[in-house]
Length: 405
Image 1 (cartoon, rainbow, N blue to C red):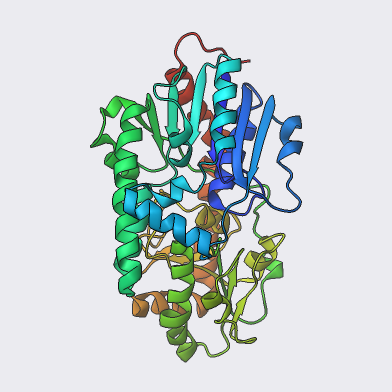
Image 2 (cartoon, rainbow, N blue to C red):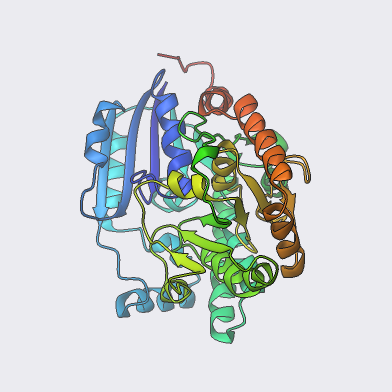
C-alpha cells in the first residue's frame, strides 16, 4: 500500500509513549508498504527526522516555532482558543506550513490510505480526504483533561481544564465521525468510540514492546531498595503521578522501609517535580539517554497514575524488564494484566504504600511477579505481532485495491 501518515509532535526522539508506539509501528509497516511520513513538531537541536529517509519511502519534516509553555504568546493562544471554543492542544500546531505541506502531498500523489496519528492532525486534513482515512487514537483526548480536572485543586486550572475538555470532546466527536475507520489502543477506549459511530468502524490496535531492548538484568539491581517511575514529566498526567507518589505515598513507604529511595526519571520535569529532589531519598533525573539502567537498579516499578487515557507503554517496558510493578487501576487500564499475577493494583495512598512495602520486603514475590510479567510480554506483545494486527486493519480500510509491497 501507499500510505500517507501524518503526526503532530514528531516521532523522534523516542522519549514518549506516543512516539515509541508510532515509530515502532511505522518501522514494521515500512518493511512491506510505501510510507510517506509527514511530521510537524517543535523545532529542537539535533533533529534527526530527515535521516528517516533511509527507513521510509519519503519523509516530510516540518519543524515549528512553538510558543514557550506558560509564556506570554502561549497564554494568549490558550485564551483565544478558550474564547473561540477551539482545543488549544490542537490549534497550537496549525501553522500555515503544516497545512501547505499536507495539501501539497495530497495533490501530488495518490495514496491508498491516510493515517491520522493522534487526533491533532485531523484539523489540517481536508475532509473528506482523497483517500480512505484511518484515525489512530492513542487516547481519548478529552478524557485526559476531564480526569485531570478531577484531581486538580486550583480553581483557575479547573476552569481552564474544563474548557479544554469541552473543546476536545467536540473535536473528537467530529473527527471520529468523519474518519472512515478509527483505531483505539484498548477495548475500553473502543467502547467509548462505538457510542459515536457504528461498531464496524472501530478496531483495537494492540500495544507492543521491544522485548529485545528491555530484558531482565537482576544482577544490576541496587543493593538498597529503590523505586522508579519513568515518564515524560511534561505531560500533565505524568507530572501529577510523580507529585502524588512523592508527596502522598512515598512518606508512608519510608515509615516501613526508611532506606527506600524513589527515582522520577524522564524529560522536562516541571519546577514542582524538580523541587522534590532532596539529593537523598527522592531523585529527579530530567532527560536521560537510556532508561534501562534505572529500571535495572529498581526493586519495584511504580505507576501512580490518577489521570490520562489509553494504555501506558511504560508499564510494558517495566514488565519486559522483569520488574515487579505496583499500579493504580487507572495506570494499568486497558492492558491484559491480572492483579496478583502480573502486577499489584492499589488505589489509595495507604493501599499503594502497603503493596509497595510488601514487595520491598518479599523478594520471592518480586521475582514471581517479574517473571510472569516478562512471560506475558514475550508471548503476545512484540512489535512485530502487534503491527501485524494493525496492518490487517489498515488493509481492510484501504480496500481491495491496496497491495502489500
